[in-house]
Image (cartoon, rainbow, N blue to C red; front, side, top):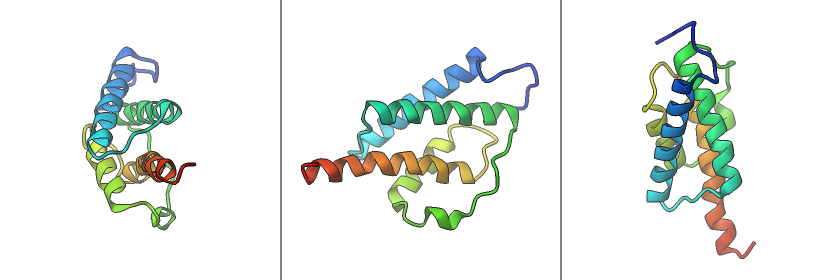
Amino acid sequence: MQDSTLTPEDPAIIALGASVTERAIALLNEHQIIPDELQQKMLATHIKAMAWRSFSGESLPELELEMFDEISPICLRLAEQACSWMDNLAYEEAHLLSVHFEVAKDNELSNAQGE
């Protein structure tokens, strides 16, 4: 869906990013993963950039997927689901997004340990 007239600040990009962010946070909450306020802002920024790449066709730099070996299967699966809500994204997008999900998942562990 490449469109050279759009910019990252186009209302369509912002709306898609906001919609997917809202859905992603709801999905995380369904799995008792609760991102804090800062994590939600970082997630929204990342997803807005994903929305831009979805429209622009801009590619990611090459990633070594081994860097993501410590991401839990649930966070990767949820990130893949969230990425499926946009078109034209590289497979690696889910790995990058899963890092945000994993950090939010660690909130539960930190809270349980009283940190």
